[in-house]
Length: 296
Image (cartoon, rainbow, N blue to C red; front, side):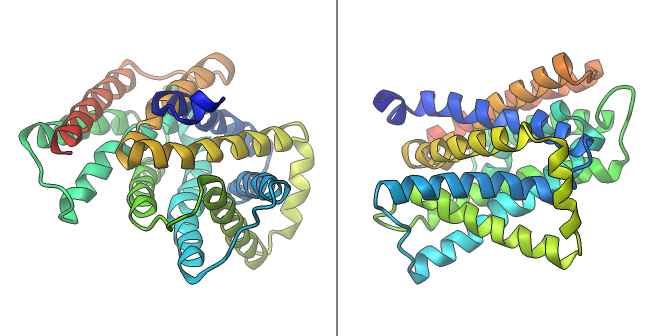
């Protein structure tokens, strides 16, 4: 376990696999009638609650400061609340596997943001990778989800907004990481803040009664909570060990898990163009990742 905690590759595989499980879990939940806004609350409440208990057992409660409080709120909004709401709203229309492909665009968007913000100068390989990734994204977008149930273009756009939020979160969390603060503390604080935001939204929308829908998936709620708690502990550790660019590559593993689960267990089928586009996106991500490593 100690070796895994210090291995960027090991953390990448474990985090990506756990992230990938949220895709089929989310589709099963929303298919059972759980509102899209409620399932992200389950994830963040479960993750934040379990990790907070771990900190209490270790006698390391979350120490609030203006910097940490700001970090928790901003990270909660752009890294979890918004992208998860987009994800679970789109999954019933696009499919778990298709939504997983969107994760793979995060490294490309991260590089684009770095260029726009002047953080990194683009080189020829990086620009080529962005172009290749964009071509793959257009190919995937034109297929509009599951082969026999093409979604409205609105949901495709919603799916494409998710990697933008993820990229923003990747950059922000590294840039503003509070000093002398461990990954479990940041994960717990960020997810408790996310859960609080989503709870206010649920109450504000008058959907208190929607909590009763969780009784339709009683086995899935604790499973998702435990999975999310483990994932985000590894997630923040991976950010500390590997940095935002390496972290963004969890989309590879998550997409593979989401596609596999969708095809094997959720009766999802995708056009050849979707698979070709996904492969081209992966090629573009490899190019942009190599370009960033060269720049570093």
